[in-house]
Structure formats: C-alpha cells, structure tokens
Image 1 (cartoon, rainbow, N blue to C red):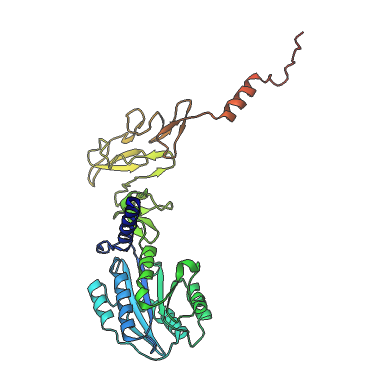
Image 2 (spheres, one colour):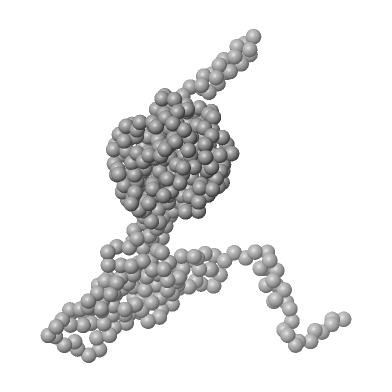
Length: 382
C-alpha cells in the first residue's frame, strides 16, 4: 500500500514539473549584424483581425532580440494581398522603438493572396540601395502567409534567391507546403515552417532568433586580428586603426607611408617576425627616425645635416627582443623561432611541443639502424 502511495506521489510530482512553466526571462539581445531584414506579410481577407495582431507580435518579438541600427540590423516591412504596399523601408527607422510603433500602425489590406507579385516587389523595391539595402550585407526575407498563392511563386522566388536573398517561408493553418518549399531557400528543414495556427507562430520566432543569433567571435577572443575585430553574421572580420591598412591575410595591419618616410610596421608573417624599432623607441636618433623592417635610419629636420653612419641594425635575438620559447635564429632586423632536438615548432611559430614517437616511428628507426649500409656485404655466421 505504501509503495502504491509513493508511486502515485512520484507520478503526481513529475506531472506538476512537466506542466509547470518557469518564469520567463527577458529576451537577451544577441550579436546579429549587419543584416538587412525584410518581413513580407500576408494581409489577405482570410487573415482574421486577431490573427493579424498575432503576426504583429511575432515581428516585434523577433526584432526585440536583434541589434537594431544603421550599422547593425536594418528592418523593413512589406504587406501584400491583391496589391503590395511598403510600410517602411530598411532606411526609414534606425531605432527599435520607432520600428515597433510603425508595426503597430499597419492597417491590413484584406484582399486576395498575390504572393508571387509580392516577392517580385520585394526583390525590386525593398532590397535596393534607394530603400536602404547595403552592399555586401546579408539580405534576409521572412514571408508569412496563411493560404495558397493565387499566382506563380516558384520562378520569381528562384530569381530572388539567385540575387542573394535568403528566404524563410512561414506557413500558418491553411498554407500550402508545396508553395512554401518553392519560395524558401535550401535546406528546407532550416527555412520552411508550417504551424497549425497563428497562436503557435512564436515557435518559428524562437528558431529564427537562433538562426540570426550567432557566436560573437570577437568577444570570445577566437580571432587573430592585429587591431580591431568586428563581428558579422556567422563570423568576424578584422579592421585596422587609422593610419594602417589591412594586408591580404585579412588579419594583419601595416602602417602607411608618412611624409617623412617613416613606416609603422607590425607584421607577423609565418614564423618571421619584424619589429618597428622607431615606434618602440629602440633607437638613438636625435630628430627623425626612419624605420624599415628591423632596421632604422636617422634623419634630420630641414636646415640640419645628418652625420655619417646613421644606419643601424639590431640583432633581435642577442638583445632578447623576441618571444621564442627555445631557439631564436637571427637575421638582419628579423628573427625566426626554432626548437631543440626532440621538439617540434607549434603553429604559433613560437612555442615548442615534445615530439612523441609512435610505434611506427620507432619501428622505422630500428629498421634503419640495423639495415646494412648500401653496398655493404653481409657475412653469414656459422
């Protein structure tokens, strides 16, 4: 009897835990931009007033988690039925509060469902420079519809995708799955969503937030930018301080030539490292120090004459101006790191790791050591 009571208590506890809803925390903003995001919403007569209100909330819930701004995520809204109308463009609002206000002021068109016409309008009008679309910034469209299109969508949607627009298709209730797949970008499991009612549309909102909320590689330090790291969608890019230019590796910054010929050099190329002796004050010039990789030359202001032998070169290894863990190999103005026997140089070209011998390595070494030299004559023991 006691066991039955205990089992009933456990089942009741599990049921309570399963149905209990934890207190929801405010949505955390994520690093998303820059992205140009356009909502294309179906406001045909089949969308009931309370359903349209749910669609408003759906859009607001999504943008509440995004970084909104002219240099971050820009948002535009286009609604359609038998006609298409821009509610606001990508460049209309740069503040979250203004976007929310504009969404709440949308009046439904309440006519037919010309989805193909709306996609073409979005492609030719919403994603243009005049409307605020930025070059080299991802274009993302979210199409929300509750019915079957009254026109063709496959060809125009394919044209939009070819122009670089990533399309998410969200179908509600009576929406046609074939049409949704014809509109959306591949893979369909990531871009096509069909929910039973407008009340469940928030499920897509959560998944869509996850698509745009990416790791901020800059804040996590998973980068090797010389100067500044800028987070972008699905990655990062490096940017240099004023007076520097970004090299072809996309990470290293090099100083530009100044009027005195002085170069600010901060370059790491593979395992050869160069130091700007002028910038670091490692010189004895009285007036002007002119730097080249690892070497500096003294010069004088107008009206002064430099003495002879103003050229200086420094052995960076001998003076300890390196960060090699084991061996520093010096060349004029540069140095290369190396490792002691039994160690190998790591990818950072500075530190060393013990060389572990595998069974195959040991076997080959033993075979090589007992193998007679080429040309030698083996003697047979009796």
